Amino acid sequence: MTAMTSPMSEPPRRGRIRATARAIWAVFCLFVGAIDALVTAVLGVTPLAGPWARVRRVVADQWWLAYYDARDAELVGEETEDV
Image (tube, rainbow, N blue to C red; front, side, top):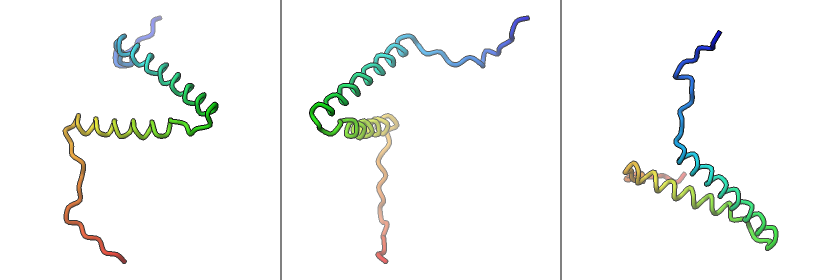
């Protein structure tokens, strides 16, 4: 008796080049994190992971804004009352 599977039950396949690039990026990030921890321990400076995360967020936000041709929202004509 053979098991019947639906073609929809298989996960989508990724290309070999894309999978290889993601693996290389993961190893690179692992080494950068290890080097950052080593430099932090040896020199006693703050780790670069925090500022690097903020830079990545800003770059990603700008990329998405450009990708979708979006604009930053601006509030015009809103008056606030100090209570």
